[in-house]
Length: 184
Image (cartoon, rainbow, N blue to C red):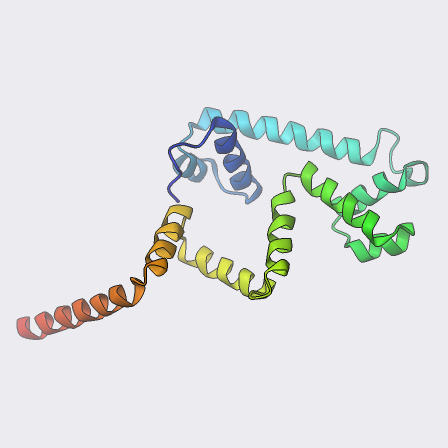
């Protein structure tokens, strides 16, 4: 993926952290983010330290004594353990709206709030389903397309150029086949 040249240092750092979360190697990250191994190591240490502090904060200093923790803190811990909102509503006897609010806070703390915003936008736009959005994401991932490539394709589609390009590719393919036949 080609990174936009106008990315701020913080945006590049977040990009490196996302790649680290995906368990990408340092060499891969260095190529994608245009960062030195030293800078990536520094970002990794900072991220691991923040993650450890957040984990300790969620677990509390006194171990797993969840009965003394507030329901909000218990819910955040449950989200961090992968439990779903319905389980939290039932186990902690909290109203669903309160659990949704806590989920938003948890997602913000873990830099994943944008995921929730995307889901809410998809739900609001009744033309698309979340499953079709996820399928599109899988296709783009399989193709290895970056943000700039996706923008170019969408721009071509916006100006009705995709059919023209498809015909041109077919025509060039026919030309290549014809040249192969002439060479044989």
